[in-house]
Length: 314
Image 1: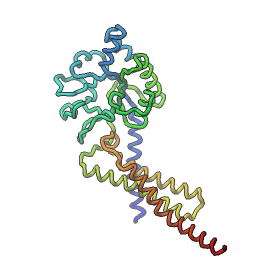
Image 2 (image 1 turned 120 degrees about the horizontal axis):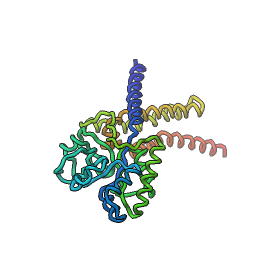
Image 3 (image 1 turned 90 degrees about the horizontal axis):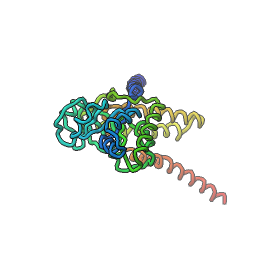
Image 4 (image 1 turned 180 degrees about the horizontal axis):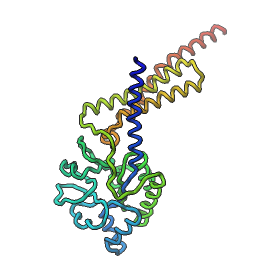
């Protein structure tokens, strides 16, 4: 009976993981954008009309424009996705994609247009809105990767960002154009599609109950400790097979553990980065602590036996 229960639970876990993987494979559409304030600065620096500057960036592949609310009426005819930067209650409506809130999320606009979760900046409300993760250097407090294209590609491939806003910096206008073009080429080479459509909403359940969220985080932390420790204790501490077979068993067990944790944290809150897996450092420290407690006594006992026989031989 126990085996059947475990098999049934593992089957559910693998199904949930498969659904998540397929959803991420099918959600390869991204938006690339610039700020309207940079468009104005480039227009002034190059003595070009604003619509010409916008057309040049559209030719590069830019699909999105972030705009302060006071300029919304100026950009209606550019043919780009418009992301308003809302600081106060907006006075106009329009056909927008995800709204970038700077001072708290306003529920009525969030329900109507969705929310841009700006990485390292936006604190999301625990409500089931249409969310899209947005990355821009403008809101990154500390930049550890010096190359801009590398930073944006990391935000694309290692996290769930779907909107990327490039900014005009000290490297100038030519560098901005070159980096946008290089990013688009690299992203499309990796199987992504730069699209003018609104990024697809992820296929996952959104959790609003804090107690349930804390329970899932705690369960993931416990399993992150239990699976590797249990596999090592079972297959390595008292090995009955060859070293290769033990290694394969440990690898298979920890892989199953990772899939289980992935299914537990497969809800929309975690995939969007609103809630995170807590305790990565604690899990590593605990793992080494348990290893220390298991192996050091045995090692000390072995050393004592060797010293005992060595002293009696002398």
